[in-house]
Length: 169
Ligand code: SME
Image (tube, rainbow, N blue to C red):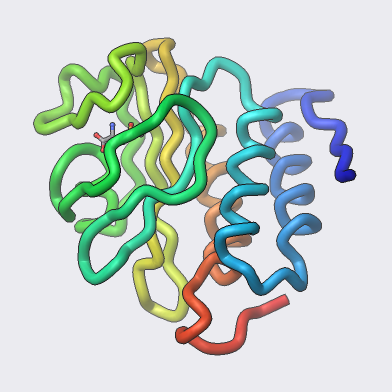
């Protein structure tokens, strides 16, 4: 059993705890699916006001659903489509306060109101994206963005396909 105490302190402290827990959980584990599953569970446990948290993987230039928490979701997303597809195509994080105002937003769950998507890059390759959805408009701020970018930096090498070579840590 893994028990992490998440949630004491302010939001930056919460992300420090979340990153430390994700680092500890994935360190030395070579199975990408296990690592994505555990990290999505950690996010779900640690962050409030989410209705979806998980991964899409870059499989041959298309985003394909990976481990997640929340309701069943769209399985395949082309690069450039929706918030996830734009994050993948541009390799830029997308912090969207109102998904209904985002051109091409893909509504997997009608409860979603805001969304944060972070590209996952390892060894110059786009591995996939980390996607967080919230039913609260404007749920994600600069602290969430910075915290999730750091989380993505830690996790990306540990969810990379094995054919990409040795992992760090
Ligand atoms: N809303 C996303 C699709 C993925 S789900 O939210 C899980 C998008 O527009 O890319």
